[in-house]
Length: 115
Image (spheres, rainbow, N blue to C red):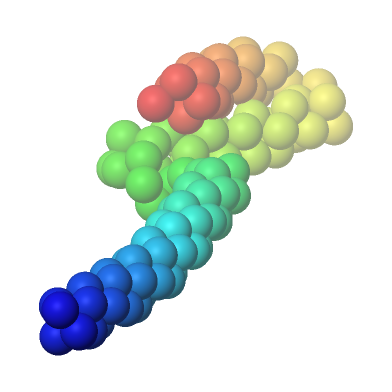
């Protein structure tokens, strides 16, 4: 009888050790899952921050977005230059071209922000 009580106490001890080990492992898994979730949230936040950046928006937008941005810049500057030339020289034909170029710049701006 003494032998069976020793076996029972050994089994109970093993069971307690296994339960403690399992509880520690579950704790570790829970902590690591929380760390992974925090890292994933940090990555989402970093991606959102990058998406706000103009250069990243241009790079990720592809060729149409890049071309519309270049058109916006070029036609805006050309329109401003022609407007200043028309005002300084009283040449009304330059004003018409400045308005057309300003309209093209506006179309490029709309394309840039909608793409």
